[in-house]
Structure formats: C-alpha cells, structure tokens
Image 1 (cartoon, one colour):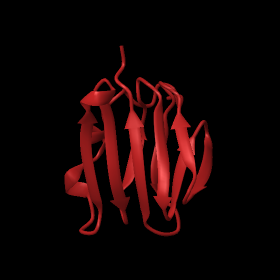
Image 2 (cartoon, one colour):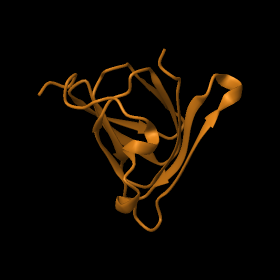
Image 3 (spheres, helix red, strand yellow):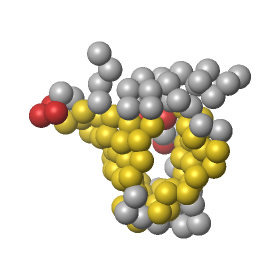
Image 4 (tube, one colour):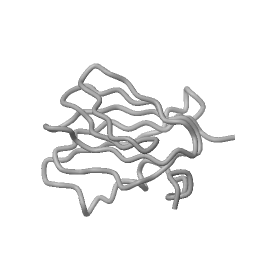
Amino acid sequence: MTERTAAVPIDQESAVERAALGQRDRVRFWRAPRWDDLECLSAEFVRHAYAPHLHDTYAVGVIEAGAERFRYRGAEHIAPAGSWSRSRPTRCMTGGRGMSAIAIGCCIPRSR
C-alpha cells in the first residue's frame, strides 16, 4: 500500500478508539455551526497515538504543549509546542506524543 491508499477518510471522532485511550488521555470533539459545521478537536494525549489515516479535506492543527511526533509523506517529524501543522487531503498520516504528553487543537472543514 502506498501512503495515499493506506487508509480511508474518516472523521476525527472515528479515528480515536475510546477503549484504547489511557486513563490520562483526554479528547473532546465538536462541530462549529458558525463556521459551516467545522469539525474540531481539543485533546491531551499522554499515551494515545493515531493509526495511519487520512482526511478528505485539509486538516489544520496547533500544538499547545509538549510535542507531536507524526509520520507524513514518508518521513518522521516532530512538531514542538507553539507550532501548527496542516495535512493535505488524501495524504496518509499518523500522530501521537513526542517525548512528553501533548495538548493539541485541530480543525477540519467539511468536504463538499
């Protein structure tokens, strides 16, 4: 499988297996009707990591604390606190904590 075909598009809530969250992992999902039902996430991950997945629209994230380790376009990356990221539609990616827990926020617009 290539990175472009390794996963199917899913929403953020479906990407988080609640049973796999650690006791200290926290995640909240909501939609913002004011911005065309924008899909939003706020999370603190101590243990959780996303399996390879993709989105059918752009995803924009902000690392509020800690650092996020993720694989994107075939390479491993670290995004420190204060950085932001975006992923292109149909690009396979992963995500999880770097050396310590992370606090992140992410928004994904609806596909048309």
